Structure formats: C-alpha cells, structure tokens
Length: 391
Image: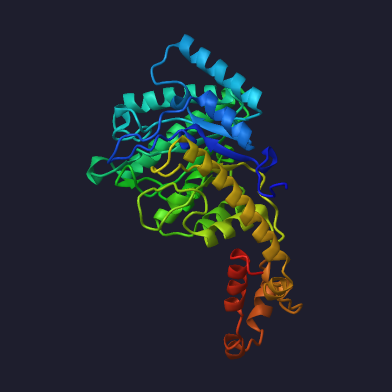
C-alpha cells in the first residue's frame, strides 16, 4: 500500500545540518548523540525524500580550517549532495558561537569585530553560492544587550543597516543571484535582541538601499516566544511580497526557544499556517522551501533523529490534506463567503471626493448589524472536527 504522506522532493522539504545534526547538548547537559558527518546527513535526507539541506558556514567547514581543507570538505559535500539528489537552497553565517561575537557581530562597539563579521559573512556567501544557494539568511543571535547602557539602540540599528547595505553591494558586485532573508527573535541568547519580530524586520528592510533584495525568514518558535500569532506575521510578509524563506518548528508560548518537531505543540496553529502557505482557501500557494528549523528531543538516539525528521514532513503533509478538505467543505465555503453589496463594494477600494461623500451619506443600521451572529463558533468547530478526523 502506498503511503499518502511519504515526502517527495516536490514537497520542497528542507532541513539544516544543524537540525538533524543536533547532538542533544543543552545548557545543563552534554551531548547525548554523536555528531553526524554532513555527507551522511545528506545521504539520509535523500533516502527520506527531502528536497534539500541548508547550512551555516561552520556546520560544514570548521572555524579556522585551511583553504585546502575547506576546498576538500566542500568538494566532498557537493558530491554527496549530487549523488543524493539533495539541493542547498539556503545558507547562513554563524555570527554567534565564537567568543569574538559575545557582544554582537554587526552591532559590536569594536569596529574590528564588525569588520570580522563582514569578512566571515562574505566568505559564507561565497560558500553558499558555490553550493547553489539562492537565499542567504541573517539571524542576529548576539545582536542585542543585557546592559542597555552599553550602546544607543539607534547606533545598533545604523550599524546593521550599514552591514546589510555593504553585503547587498557585495552580492551585486560579484554578480550573484542571491537574496537575503532577515530572521527576527525577541530574546535568547541575549536578554533583548534588536528587531524582535517579523514586523520590526519588515519596517527595517524599507530603510535599506537595496530593499528589493531583502525579505524575511519568520520562525514559528521565535514569534510564539513573544506570544504573537505566527500566521499573522507570515501573512503580513506574504502580503508585502517579502516572505523569502520560512522556519517551521513548534513552541510553547513564553518558553525558551524549544525548536520542537513541527506541529508538536499547537496543531491548530500549524494547520492554519499550512493552509496559508498552501493557499487551500483559494489564495496563491507560496512556492518557497518548507524548512524545518527544529531538532529531536534530547531523549533520542540517532534513530530517533530520523523519526523526528520523518515526523516533521509527515505532519506537514497530513495538515495539508486536512486544510484541503476543510476549504472544500460546503458548509465552510458558505460560512466564509464574502458578503456582497453592490451599493457599497465599489466605494471602499479607493478614495475620491465623491466616494467619501457617498459613504458619509449611507444609512447603515449599526444596531441590526451588531446584533447579527456571524457563526464563527460553528466555523471553528468544523475546523476542529476536520483536524481531529471527525469529518
């Protein structure tokens, strides 16, 4: 019997080397799993039906490696990807692990640190492009403070802007077909991180010299940590044409960054997110990769890591099927059908003096409309029944 939820490359599921390669280390305990060779990771992802693998620079090439070692490692990794049919759609730079970044990379007060961050990022961009990446993600994990008096936040913003403008010009100068995606997070590992939400990032992008090259990379866990609706953040990015990449995982509200298996903690929100990305309600489908930025529980051995990876992909495909069924449900279609009023519809889309006057003269029975039930309780119950397999 065929497995309806078995992933295929057409699903465009991707994982990071740092996700399935996570050894289970945390601030309170050492690793519980061995480190996995990047070439072995891509071979296994190919077996599982994934589309691609993403990486930080030092996930593949150890910090401080010689040029000869770098070229040897990259050559072997590229061969493993080609043999496994695995793409490298996205790359990024680790600007948070080394002690030099303890108080920021692009925002550090020391200009030598900022120069080193640019140097490391340019080398990472070269590596990503060499492997075929089309998107380059920026997560400023150390771009923040615990001691707010150390710098004016306006200086930090200006320094990040200078870095992004510089790197956009570098990409243009090299002739790379690469776009940037900025990833927000409210805190951890810093007490407060600059640009804590996707909305902050979207505004900042509009201040850049080459804003058309830059979009966002929202992550489920990061928005949920702040108690915000991830679906709304993604919707805003999509509406702005700025959803360049996405990180899928799961998270409990108000906790540290947990990076659980996709759908593990809030299946309803995961359902609504899949519905939005897949466009099952009739909107355009988002065509980018579905990247799982998560990792297996610390309870797991290596076999459990691959159970985790399968689970992320299967859950997404199951929720896609549920979303399609929900939006095809005749009762749902009736409940969410747009109300039509030919006397009003044409007045609302754009301003004119005539439209303003006609709207001001409308006789609208606010009490009658306010007393009208919308049946969202029924709609939400139908959603739950689809999600729980009762419809």
